[in-house]
Length: 319
Image (cartoon, rainbow, N blue to C red; front, side, top):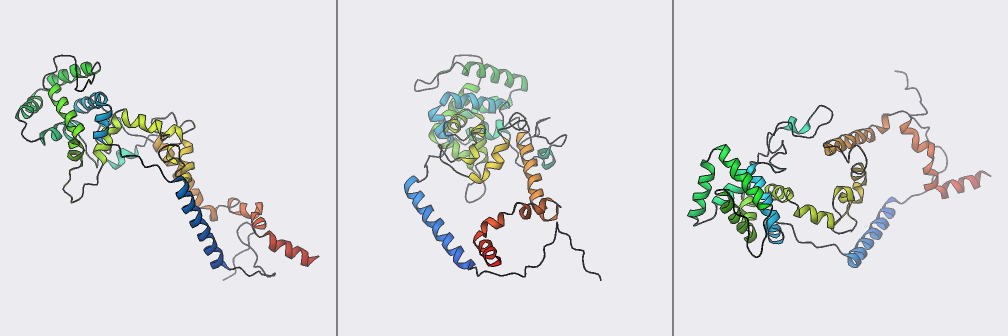
């Protein structure tokens, strides 16, 4: 079998010149110690922000009217979560796309969420010793679609003019049992019981925060907090910790795309950014196999800067 043909773009000649002793273990140890000391010093000087977690209780306490305004959209199925599409529900036409392909629809609904049942009715039914409330919930569930829609629309209009002078004050209207349901849901949230109800699971530890996070994200409370803490996408939020502290700086390449068109204006921005990053990752993996691209390190000769002492000594010996 004949030897493979030598290609300058792919192959290098074997080095036959002088060599220099290099203690890799020493270099690694020194680097580790230096980084460790820097981490300890920066942690002692700057520490890290310790913000309290955002919960349904903190939201309902800080912005009770906003909570109820959001809760009624969960009840009538018009909230962002209720209309999101896969993986939560089968909303027609919903789901981010790459060209004509919707990746979410290919994966299907695998975290089914019915906001009416999961965020409002089921939690209310967990309240003990509340026959009057149970009666109102049953009245709502047994009503026809048209009647429900009428109640929801009337309450949604009324809650827009609501206030909270120590209690939820809503203008009167023909919204049937919805008012009682929302008042009790607010009281449930302010007590912390709603957080527990949405975290309930058959597992020993309730660590699935999907439902409470989606509920909170549908309101304006968490969005306002994120803006104040410089965490929104147009604030390079993925690279920040809470506040304006630097965080995951290695994510600059991801968050950069959210700042430029068409990603920052497209309704499928997340899917497009994912596609670009997958393409760039593929190019990185294939660098050793792409002619020209794989030769860039040899052309730019950065290695001579790194090993400048060695090349300086070689040049001196040669002259």
